[in-house]
Amino acid sequence: MSADLFTNYESELAELIGTIRQRLDTTLPDLAGDARREELRTTQGELREAGELAGQMEMELLSLQGPTRSRAAPRVRQLKAEVERLQLEAKMAAQGVGNYESNRRALLGEQASADDLLGGDAVVDGDQRTRLLSGNERLMRGSQRLQQSHRIAIDTEAVGASILNDLRAQREQIVNTRDSLMQADSHIDHSQRTLRTMTRRLMTNKMITTGLIVIGVALVVLILYIKLTR
Image 1 (tube, rainbow, N blue to C red):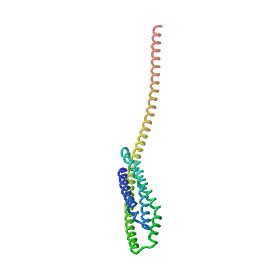
Image 2 (image 1 turned 180 degrees about the vertical axis):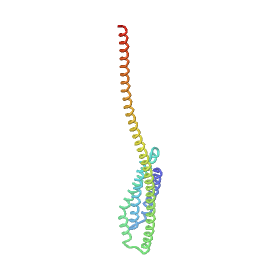
Image 3 (image 1 turned 90 degrees about the horizontal axis):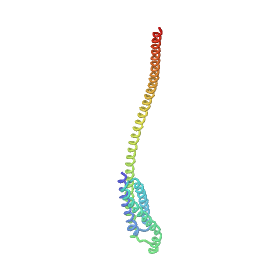
Image 4 (image 1 turned 30 degrees about the vertical axis):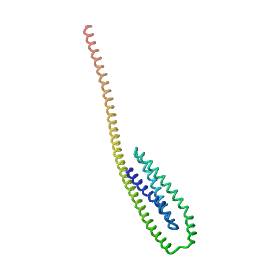
């Protein structure tokens, strides 16, 4: 599951990097004014999303094992470095917005023709549609990531429940084993008491037997003495 999620994050980040690169290289140079600023805000939002994806890839990298992790680590570093380059380029582009607009106003003398205005409205409308589509795509990607995270959470919960069941079964086995040991210990104590009782009885019987033998021998000696003395 972690490897599949890592691959999905990598694919999304690579696609997002391509989109941002096209904005910076192709779209932004042809824009000015509010349209340019709006495009920069959209780019900044995509860059934040790219940074989050890079962070999620780093987190998923920790859960990979062995050779898979070794192969994935350079790709993570490469994509993260590309995101940082794009952030720097976007920052430089944002810093150049004021100079670009002032030069444009100086050349046009703060005047704009009706064609320029109409063209500007068309560009703004096109940019709005592009931003809406881009925002929708980001929402869809975010929703997919949430669904993936939800599935992972469900799988993790199932694994946790299985582990808890195993631990409960092991606890019951330990309790049963402890009860069996306690019963065996009780039986051993009872057997020890029985053996001690039997040992005492054996010693008593031995002493009685020895006493009877001594008495018998004494009687025989006494009888022989009486017979011999008559």
